[in-house]
Every structure is written in structure tokens, then in C-alpha cells.
Image (cartoon, rainbow, N blue to C red; front, side, top):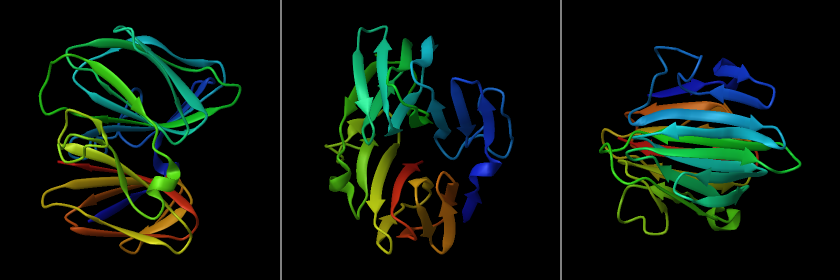
Length: 232
């Protein structure tokens, strides 16, 4: 089953400094048909104005992955972690038993991110944060794992979830396959470009929810950048 969720069907909230679109029910947007997709609970498409951002606020029992599409995001948290994550790179926060953090766009341009929340396999634990660059050339024509709860994905940022987050960049006409295990769920969003996934077209920022498919064949109709979550 492949369900297309066009960008213009997503929940939306424009706060001036933040223009947010929600693939799943979040904050003031509630759709009982879009509560989660397996362990994937949140996929927000956020545009953050220059010199603004999210002030300190708490989280617990959630794996929070931020994929920076344009600009940069600056992180601070109650553990003393600080870091700046640029376009194409990824940061991960395991909220564990509880953490406070702030996310600011300190750049002179709009920052655009995907923020992805995945439910952990166990509640509690020591919170932690990490970031890592993932050069686009390394994922040209293929999927590269950015964050993962599986020991075999040694080059990925660790998360405490039965899930992995992947990205690929495809030139127009290129294809990439992804094997989805039995009883697994996939959610894919083209950050840029347009694609076909098993014959279903998706444009930039559309969501594609996948169940009961074992092989995903993604073909780029334009030069495209893709982010995919594979979750239980």
C-alpha cells in the first residue's frame, strides 16, 4: 500500500517567525487518520526566519532527528551541549528521561528543516545529543543511513528506536531501490525535485506512506533529494 499525502493536504501553522507544515497530527493540527506511521510519530517541515527559533523547552521519551535542508540550526541544551548543524547535515537528540533544549536560526537567511520524531523502544534513560556531516556526494545515487537504532549501521548517528533514517540524492532519470523488511513501515519525502515510488508520483515536500511493500524502487523525475524513515 502506498498512500500519497500531497504537501497542500498537510496541517499548517504560520507563526510569522515559523512556517510549519505537519505530516502527522501535531500541536493545533489534529487528524485521526494521521496520528503516526508505525513508530514514526512526527514529521514537521519547518521554515524558520532569520535570527529566531525555538526557546528552551522540555522533551522526554522521544528520538528527535533534525535534517537541515537549507541554512543552519544552532542547538543548546540543559546538558551543556552546543552545536551548529548546516544544510545537508543531521543532528539527533535522545530525550530519554528528560532534557530541555533550544533550537535557533542565527543565520541571515531562512533555515528549512525536517524534524522527525520516532518513539523509542524503551522509556527513560540518560538523554544525549549528537550531530554529524553527511556530504551529499556520498549519497549520490544511493541511500545512506543517517540515524539508526541498529548496530550494523556503524556510520550513522545512534538512536534508541527500531528505526533508521536515510537520505539519497538522485539525478534526473536515476533510480535507487530500498528493501523494506516484513511488517515494516516506510515514510518518504522528497526535499527537492519529483520522484516516482513504485509508480506513484510525489513532488517536493509531499509525503509517501508505505505499508506491505517489500521492494521500493524510487526513480527521479527531476534532480531530487530524498529522506526516508524505515520503522517498525
